[in-house]
Image (cartoon, rainbow, N blue to C red; front, side):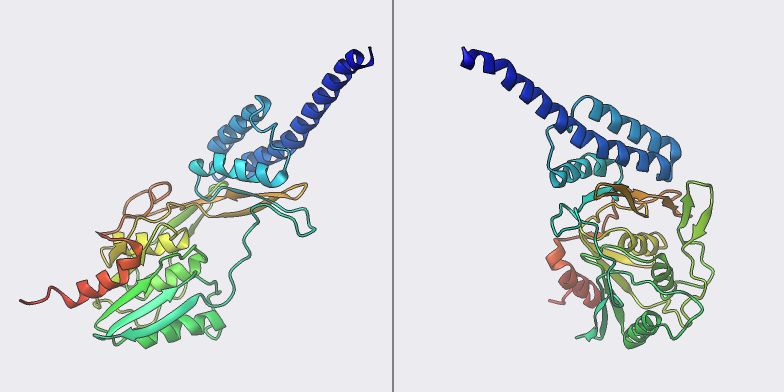
Amino acid sequence: MSRIASIPTIALALLFASGAGAQTARKPVAAVASAIEDNYFDAARGKTIADDLRQASADGAFDALTEPAKLAEALTERLKPLDRHFRVTWSDGAGRSGPSAPRPPSGDGIERVDVLPGNIGYLKLTHFANFEFGDRDAPVRRAIDAALARVAGSDAIVVDLRDNRGGSPNMVGYLVSAFTPRGADIYNTFHARNGGTTSEAPAEPYAQPMLTVPLYVLINGRTASAGEAFSYTVKNAKRATIVGETSRGAANPGGFVEVGDGYAVFVSDGTPVSPVTKTNWEGTGVAPDVAVPAAEALDKATELVRGPKSI
């Protein structure tokens, strides 16, 4: 008798557990949706994305994800095809976390500057470090100026952006100006939700641009954001040959919005538009002019510099 009576009790317990799981997932999903609706650069599209997320939650799409880390991963997977910068993170503040918000990169981003055999200048950037114009003695400004001076006498220059995950528009504009004519109408303009615009053109262009030296840019599938902005700009200005693999396709900048309970979501609050293409690289990436596996890109670039071997 007691065994039979326990069946409704078990069923009721399972029902409550299911309901608790649903509530555990639905609250942060709703918060993420609101953050997207309130902050995404395209207000109408942001609302559509948010409404779709709310509907999926109401349909129970996330109810089984009672572990916050797993929920953050699932939300990221769902959102990223809509904008490559979307990312949901979670941390409980006690050392346990899911996919976490990346720390801003430190340092000047210059991994290596060298002159390779054949007088080929080589500049490897891990990220585009930020500096403010107006201070020529800022450490990052001095570092990039020194790097450019180091390769200035080269017969060709290779800028290696493989695995470069992005960074500062100021650095992008400044580095572009080191290889293009002053005043060239080639720089991306960022459009914000409120209608405001910001140009990537540097307030202080590089003083002695290298306008005729052959320029090669190396990219791969992990080249993203600001790394793509530089590649896209010099490619469409017909100033560089892009070598390697198609880049990630993450054009729209933004930042993390904390939504409570340890969750945060990266929301794009702007979108770049090139005056040359009238669009950007979101979702498509920057296609190389010379496609080779990423590991072979530097060898291919040096081969292109040296030209075909005579027989």
